[in-house]
Image 1: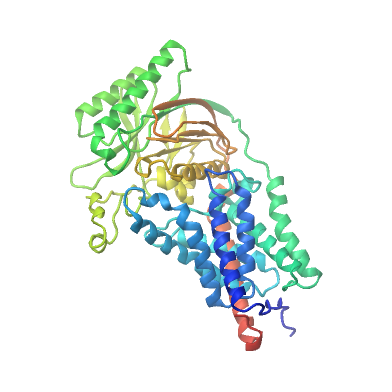
Image 2: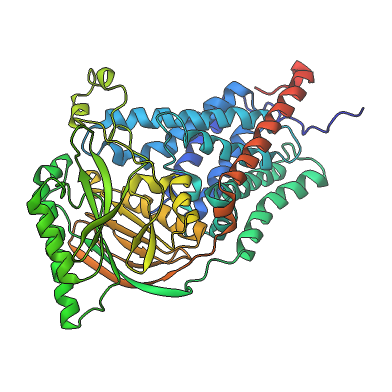
Length: 522
């Protein structure tokens, strides 16, 4: 039986200088990938980022590939996640980045193995998705922040999210970038010899671009529409201690809602059909504090429409719950959604006893929150609303579940006060834009300190507030009921890409074992 064709390994040229050059390419690629993320609109920088990674990894040994992948991950994660240390110091930030960089390191090692196979940019892109899939699940429930898809809400690949979700969007971006790298290697006459190699590299660049351009974005209109109001009450001060003034935060949102009611009566704005408050807008439990319940009920009755109230509930004999309450005029709270995906080291504190030895701030989380279990959407006036509270928007299932259960509109109540004036809020908004296209749903982002926004099903930001100001948005949004292919397929496309990538690694490893030692690159 004839052996499979294998692309020749990159020759040894330049010795130590090439080692430095490859390391520089990997680190530069990681930093370019960071620059492609919001609040910048430089989505296209993701392509040369992966091209540089491709050039660095092609033909390398497994150990070298792991090191180069680690450099790429560090150069990407250090600036992207700097907001995690805003008020707690550099320790947690650095630890998180190092942990998350282990996944690109594993991807780098795997890409090095498959880089000798025909069509290697395809396998490399599959492996990148596999790395993202792994870190979205482990450890501590995963941390999907920084997925390539979340840097592409302004790029030409965005519409692919409606076909295969965030994984397909990441795949298309990485494939195009790895294809560019393969073309660069071709021009430099390193590997990819022959017309087949050239055609494969060109296809890797063009196919995702053409697919993205030919796939239509969801329609901005719907079967019917509703008018939604977003309340951003702001907080008394920056920092971790903002919740020390819990009543002040609640008062801010009560005051802003009262202003909305006055504007409606005066005819300055249309009467909304529903209102969305942010996460933690009532850190005072209205079930246990009669005064808070009376005040919230008063402004809701005054406005005369249902309000989704972000509250921290503290039931007897149980830990606190991060809950969105459906507050009906004249009736009070009638339904609720409790956050299912809790933020480790924020709402829960894994390894508390160990971490206390290095950082006493862990005891600010005095009691772990209790996660919810029901993904069902809630009825808010004329709309069925799926809720993904803050951190949850990064998780595919947390957003898809309520849509499959009938949500016509998505709400993302958030509390970003502890991250100050950082890029975090804009990175999170980019996720909401991708989710809008992925599920063909308008998305309402309501944040205590901003930026709050109303996002159309096509990912367009219809309206947006500033940061650390009190403000209100009133906009008309469509209600959609049809499910996109991505919503129906769930994690299916992701698992297909993962299996393809892992299969390529197994084939590449088998061929490497059969190759002569002299053909292996360093």
